[in-house]
Image (cartoon, rainbow, N blue to C red; front, side):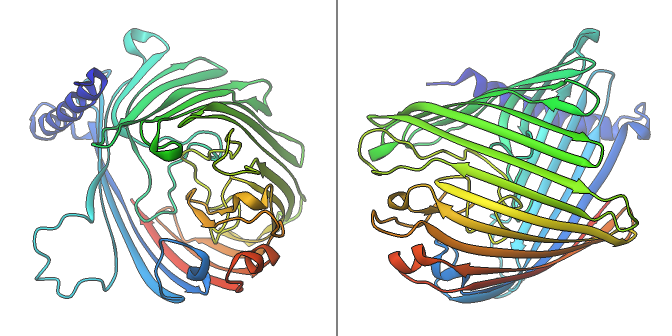
Length: 421
């Protein structure tokens, strides 16, 4: 069956290319209406023992590699009330080619990360539209994020409508993936209200439908309602978020929940030291595969900087207690130290990593304690174009991993250079 919304997106992408070509070569279009930009990012990573319980990585216990990501974008405004944005992306792992002159015709490393049409403030109204492939990033990315740490990142083929007012906005969006086995649809409403100059509220309602993503290969329908408050009070900063889920997974009903709270204090000194604490929880299933599903679905998040930089843990079946310290010892240089203690909500449900995949199957009599993680991070911004990042993380395995299989401490070190223009 032809999906009219899918056809609309495809037509929009074609129109995007046509409009861009016209804008680029028409003599009467001022060059100031066309902007070119890009990004080149290199990151080296070293893993020690991490692969022993991280499925989908590699069978090698220890590994080291260098990742390359290159993006270039064209941002054009050929006429008033129309914006065209195109962003191809090239990503790969260094030293994976036998020969650079024998690549064949494979284009797996080259993709279209974003390509959309913007129709801002239509007719002078608060309504704007965005049609085409685009990133979504809402709140701090706990449920919907662009996952920029990934060498590929995340984008959606979607249509989005925005209503924007002086102190509030709301997005309504719909996206989908058309597949042979069964289509996947994701959409919803996400709002933002400035309650005061220093306090904001962000309510949301999200829907995920996957025709073959449920229990036993059946249909999955997840409905998520949530709210988020963030703000500051002098040197204090704080945030709280809570979400409830219902729906159906195959023949089973869904009822799950998740929450997050954080608070921090920044001292008014030269180094701007900040002390922070956080606590995250997400429900799990005491009897996986039987009856009602109570494991929280993390949807499409940016988990990387939330539950430890090693990505061992995601927002599913987890309790994460965290403390952090951050300071700026000199201009444009920031260091941070974070500690996490991970416990499972339900040991029978197992451990889920940042991607949502199960790292380790659970056992009813297993310990809840997954382990500790310490993350040390340093960032330096050389200028408006270049920045550098280095980090080291240590994971001390807990009793749950010993009760269910391999128990090994793991190490993760990385160094990244990024140039944007």
